[in-house]
Image (tube, rainbow, N blue to C red; front, side):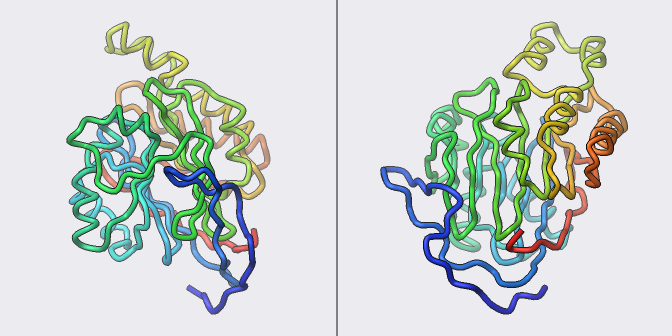
Length: 304
């Protein structure tokens, strides 16, 4: 990986940086990489069995959600060549167990093995978490905040889901941008806009509508999943992808695929056709519920 210098800039910022208890935006990073570097996105687990995604560039990195055990995080990262990958923060989307079940133990283990790292989440998510899942080092932000942590740009994007104050996350490293957008019940214009400058997306393709209706779930659960605060169907995800895909987009990871109410090949075919119609030559990848998938690696220019 070539990385030989920095250009120093003053006042560089992609949005206000807000920390708990402070009313003024903090300054953004003071340095940006001069040469190209590699962005890595790795889904360690995606679905009702647990959610966790790594995004990094070899110098800085984050985990999005902590819904699997710290031991599985360690094993799966090592299996994907990420054993020593930096973890500067953990970003929590909402308080459901498949997103925070391992958070408290992960916080303790990171503090012991590396150093304490912040776990960023909304206050509503913290309050909705079971006490046993609440991590040490929690930092509170509001949906809509844009800020920096360890020179990583982070955007907390509000989403409609049946929790207290859920968000999706957009992560900016140098000139690269990746977003993790899952657990939302309907497309929104804000979500589509937030995708337009992304190089990579982790996007929910939860269920096939007809399979869900014909499937074994009880009526109340079907209604929850199909509701405006449930989960995206394949067709809804395709709508967001059609509206939000931009010229930088290189990779789309289809996430939170239901094992009972979806088929990977259906979701992949739909996503591929949407990208083809839009003229976006992005590669489509499938995630898995109980295992990591090969890390997506791409060279990115820090100046876009």
